[in-house]
Image 1 (cartoon, rainbow, N blue to C red):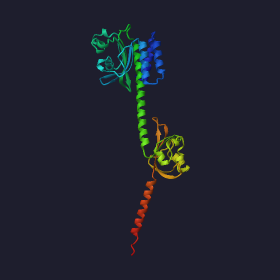
Image 2 (image 1 turned 135 degrees about the vertical axis):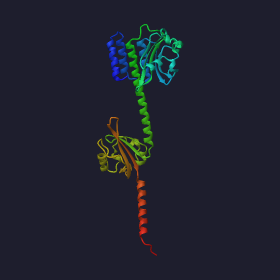
Image 3 (image 1 turned 180 degrees about the vertical axis):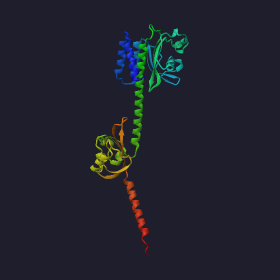
Length: 328
């Protein structure tokens, strides 16, 4: 359900004007304002409040994968149901929720001839039931359902349907946040593994060019331990102040348009020695394009340049010898 649909459902609750309305709206408001420490706590609170408001003995948050129905969270006065329990989807009332894609309610299952032989009714004797689909990123992930062994003394009303649907939306959004957080943590772990494993110095600096992360190779290349340089300007790494200022004007600013091709720059180690570094510097931007900082990759090419110098000297010597006539 979209935010606009949620708003319309809430307004329809207000228009009902029934005596039970205030209690339902207060519960929805409290659920929306509560800061939960875990998804399990959120589910338990939604289920407990739902059972109290609807006057039903059991509340379940389920996850459906194919034909398997798994209990994710449960609040019940009955014994036997625990998180992790699995059932065939077809053996649950929730199969009808997935088929309809909307809220399903039964006031008295025993009065519905087609359901008298249903496994849930036969084995558990559940007479009253109301459930709504939990959607995660637009797809049905499971159900929020409430049930009781007694028939309803009064039929489920429209605001009961809407209450359960809105609570299902709340749980669905919590699942989305959890999945996004897990994906973010996965991406962070992957980045950290690559960042730390690279043999060249890697430096992350903010938009003011203050270092907030560096990899272990920084110590081998520059002589600084990563935690020793955090919070310092990248100026400490440059061979001279002019090079630092020039790099800032050309590359490390929000408006820089220079290509991210490798370039050579002189850097200064902690012990004061200067060395040539092959560098790639890129801007790091957020999803909306805002500048978050800069990533610098520095490879010490001292040995490579020395090898090239020796090769050039050798070629020059050989060329000179070939051009010089042999003498007896």
